[in-house]
Amino acid sequence: MKETSESRFKSWQPHTRDFMDCIFCKIVKGENPSYKVHEDKDFLAFLDTNPLNPGHTLIIPKKHYRWIWDIDNLGEFFEFTRKVAKALQKSMNTEWVVCDSVGMLVLHAHFHLVPRFKHDGHREFLDSKAVKNIPKEEMENIARKIRGSF
Ligand SMILES: [Zn+2]
Image 1: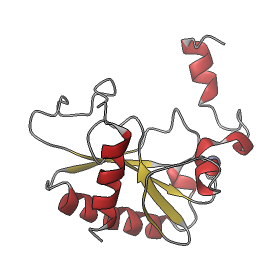
Image 2: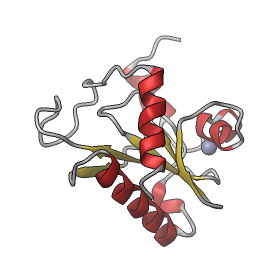
Image 3: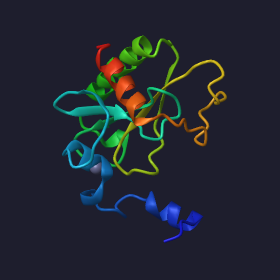
Image 4: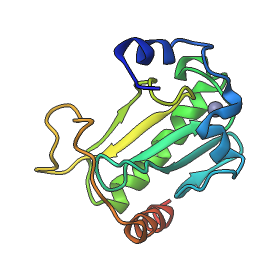
């Protein structure tokens, strides 16, 4: 089906998609591959496969929630996110790590953590079209480097 502004609008309304075919739930269950960087019993961090910069990481609760604001232990989610942000600062050699929540394309609550650099193709805000083409081997190296920075 061709995506129109109307279908796009419908797709991000709550309850229009069943979480059974949620791509993030599949990653949690190990049914879809991912470049994991960190996890605990409730939360998971893995690299975005359409990275806006090297080290672009997604943070999700393992349980399916539609919005960040629905997460029961939201404080712990923020603490987990901070740990990952600190590891990104260290491993990607930048203090500038931004956090974003949009909630449109995948209807499973998630934060984007994106390390920023000088002249990285973005302006004040991230440009969603400035996706970096990073080969699989390099993605694996980046994930390993972040995992080693906790
Ligand atoms: Zn889900």
